[in-house]
Length: 374
Image (cartoon, one colour):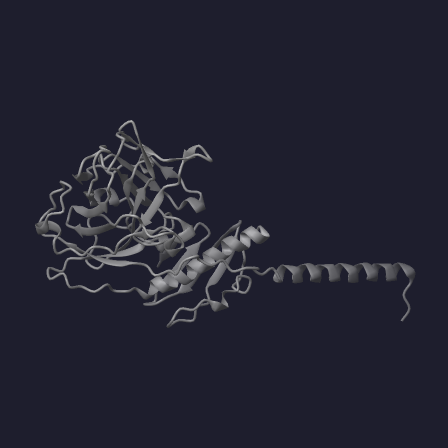
């Protein structure tokens, strides 16, 4: 067959175009995550059973034997970054109870120099030594609260629509109306001339306030589980003219970074990573002998969380999200009892992944980290 010159030019152009198109398509398929992101800690969440008390706690800061004597302590707090940092200088531990009206917290903070200066509500309390609570009632990592209190019982309470990494709206105007709070000082407050023993505290958070963060009104149901973390901020100090001051680094002329001692270690992810917080299970057992009941769908959530971590890394590498598991190298993700092969959808620079879990439930996660079960 003979072709004229014009036809040959046209065929050459078509072949060149097809080759370029196939190459471009091939390159798109080959966009695979280069390096799988890994946590810098081993994820082993703490689990705590909070029992219902038949007698309301008198919130006076004193952890009396009658109210708290047979309530289990959490484990002693560790550094936020775990074993990568020195062990905390001073012991911190906590307890939890509940009734029909309040979620009760008690804590003991060993401290040889008890001090506090901030007195106005919603001051940045972490500039003092403080105790902090983080509560995510429905475990979706969105719409959670943070409550900080110093030894003067000054409180900073706020709500975040999602973690800082996901660019939240921080609602500083959110308040725990009806909060009960108290501190007991075993020593003296703001007196550097002596050595103190410790301070203890009690907080009672009304369920009414938690309703806007939870998926139902009122107190938790028996067996319900919330995500919670507890933390203590502690500063290096100097004593000058009979007063405590935050110790200043002469090289930067700024205060040294504070210590963060926490119930559930979260490493470089920081304290605002709700998927790493502890589980608190509410029990109305009068014998107080319940065991924590693991939910297998939490394993599905955790596997999907790895998809979230990898999507963030993929987007950083390619400026787009992956549309399938192969691109995310997810073949290593396993959940005992199911075939983990999530369906990933991408649209308008957002994504969602879903996986059939246990008990005929579908488990979801999306671009901003929110996870839920239907």
